[in-house]
Image 1 (spheres, helix red, strand yellow):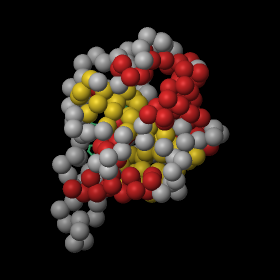
Image 2: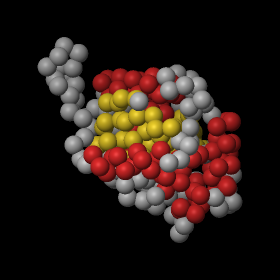
Image 3: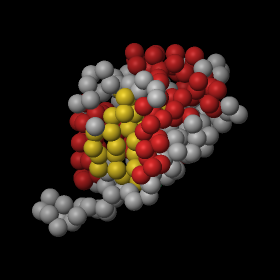
Image 4: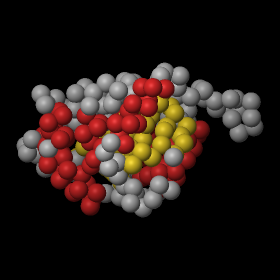
Length: 229
Ligand SMILES: Nc1ncnc2c1ncn2[C@@H]1O[C@H](COP(=O)(O)OP(=O)(O)OP(=O)(O)O)[C@@H](O)[C@H]1O
Ligand SMILES: [Mg+2]
């Protein structure tokens, strides 16, 4: 198994980690059948990759085996930014039949976080995600891991996450604070609801914290909050 070093923004910050524990707990309360969960957003840079990796680490702290699938085959920066992997093979190679999951999956050092990177940019990401090989991959992943967290491209920009949704038990919409028009978020939710995938709730990322209460008096400005439906 390929070992990688994970670099997670906020991993040393107490309040950030508490927020991820709350998110983890809320997801566990969504039910035992909710084990494949996709994260999407309206626009870019709202924090999907940061949140999926931190959440995976949080599940791993409980001893859960978690697979993060980087399904942003168009412009993923996860491998270079959050790990020390260089040009790793991943999802696009698996879906093209050029590699098997077990050969390309990487394990975060000293964790039970596993990552399937996006792999090389394919010309046809939507076709690859719509095909039977993605469904087969998700079925296999669900057998082998306790949780599968899928980091998708923003559904307000490209359709990929809508194609991924029918293969997931649940979806979470991530909202970067004060950035997202209500109607745009509603459209994304409607699109997810068209598939069998359950809309689990919303995570608000980068929200400012009121620093006047006792518990929050050391809180940093960047914090993740969440509210599950
Ligand atoms: N809670 C947070 N605390 C600190 N930094 C954060 C947080 N969330 C996101 N960031 C930073 O914001 C930037 C964008 O985050 P990220 O790449 O996770 O967003 P994304 O939604 O995956 O973007 P894309 O749509 O391009 O895939 C990164 O530099 C990341 O380190
Ligand atoms: Mg991302």
